[in-house]
Image 1 (cartoon, helix red, strand yellow):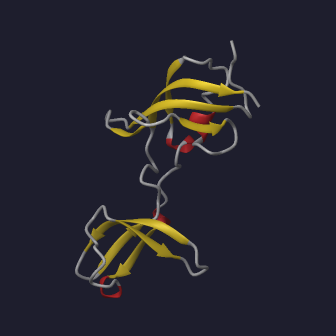
Image 2 (cartoon, rainbow, N blue to C red):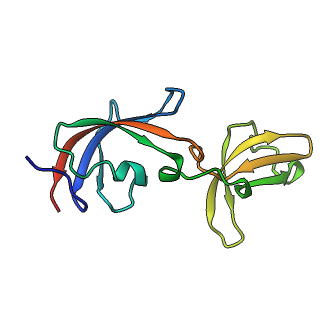
Image 3 (cartoon, helix red, strand yellow):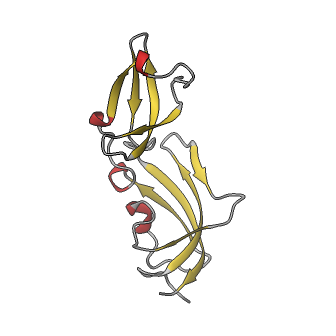
Length: 144
């Protein structure tokens, strides 16, 4: 039976949950996720769990935040003067926006707090600082 090795293309079904048990993402009802093992296309902790698996095998993988989206970086938060954001742009907490850096790079940010004076934006990945658990099932392997 074919076992996964680095460089193989795999297709997996997965469900990702937080420590609270809340599901943050799943392939349920969609096509399996396809990627090349070891290529950096998925988070490292999940990538490392695949070598040695066989088609049809399932497992639960605990991924610490350091091997997922990293620690939350306080420097990725920015206070923006409220009056510098156009009135037509929604700034409710949780709203996803895009900012442009001085070099022209567009980065996604989340509104985390709003006062009369400032809007606090966070450029951390929404799952930064969180330990994750994945239930995975290997659906297919295309050997490298």
